[in-house]
Length: 123
Image 1 (cartoon, rainbow, N blue to C red):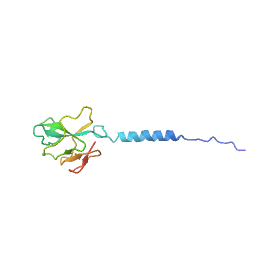
Image 2 (image 1 turned 120 degrees about the horizontal axis):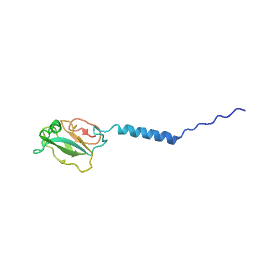
Image 3 (image 1 turned 90 degrees about the vertical axis):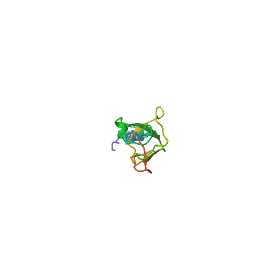
Image 4 (image 1 turned 180 degrees about the vertical axis):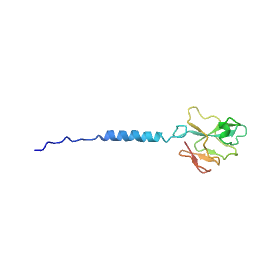
């Protein structure tokens, strides 16, 4: 009679939980430049009096511009055009990304960065 070898069984629960942890870590690594996965607002630089869009550098260097916040679905005009909609101050606790909207304009949506007036811009 042959000696029986013990049967090794793997737990499906352990395998799934490790897979879930790795997937969550991978998704977290895909966040935007500020670490947020899905910002509530994207900010564009504007002349504070005329609300004409300026290059982001004008706000980064504290030149003549201030940040103007556009929520999802808002339209960021091209540099040199007047910004319509949006707000000078996002709601408290809102996730915000400043800059990075294409100079030719874009619609603020969820997802990755794009170019052109029909492209979405997200975090």
